[in-house]
Image (cartoon, rainbow, N blue to C red; front, side, top):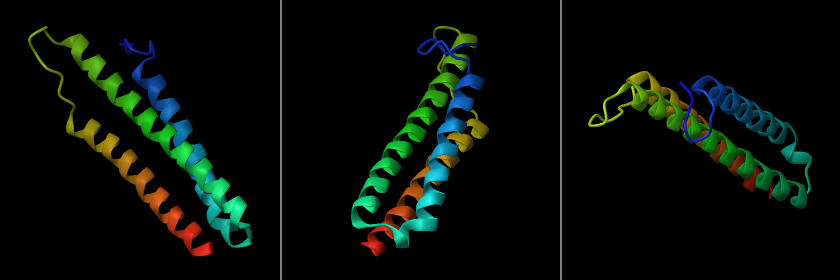
Amino acid sequence: MADQATGKSVEQLKVERTTAKRLFTRLVNSITRTHEDMSEEELRDSFNKLKIKAEKVMGANEDVKAGFIAELEAELDKDEYAVLTEQQKADLGRTSDECEMKLKETRSLIQEAL
């Protein structure tokens, strides 16, 4: 069932989230490897890029959540409410937690290098 808000299926939304996560992780890994050799300006620029990538991951995660809910609502009667499964909640929470953790760790590395 397609998400009514975006016109995309949950699977398409998951692919977009995976792509956002991959790009975010690549940037984290790049910063982790090279932060000691970066200038202050490069560190600040890298952190700004990292925040943008993190926002994209979180946004894509919210889109997946909306897709889950839209899919569930399509199967329910009008007087019923959509409730995410424990697996869906865990999936969404894991993505959010991992993103926040990597962002905090990388922020600490950058602050130490400054």
